[in-house]
Length: 184
Image (cartoon, rainbow, N blue to C red):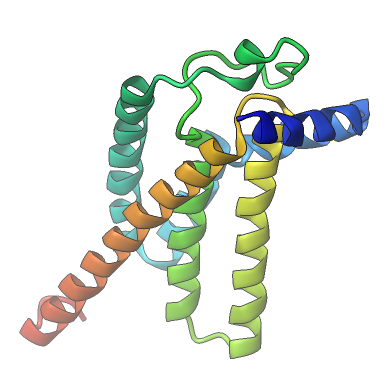
């Protein structure tokens, strides 16, 4: 855990007020703001997928809360007094809910992107941007001193697995419905 604390210390010792402000802004997109934006994008492109997203997001949020209670890992600033809680967070640390949400959002948007009629170049650029988005959210949680690296990685994996499963099931059900004439 000392290695992970050193990552946070590195960010916080080499930071400025503007840097912290930037990451406080970025971290908003790993929360409800990002969820609303993702829902709107999905809704205007694929209403059924947007509803699947809402259900998956609700399940993910509940699962994340349960996992935090079971794991009961303290936050970095609670363990190491030299780490500052710039994110003004409390509660348990693992897995990171913001990282989980960002990964969930990005996976759903990536799925929508793959199903689009855009060029492969555009799809690739979109995929890279979504990957960077998840990385920035995870980094923001460490810069703000509220999560260890493993908290963010666990959150990313949790969000990806739930979103991937939901998109996989949606895809299978959509194909069956089309074959039976229910969806047109």
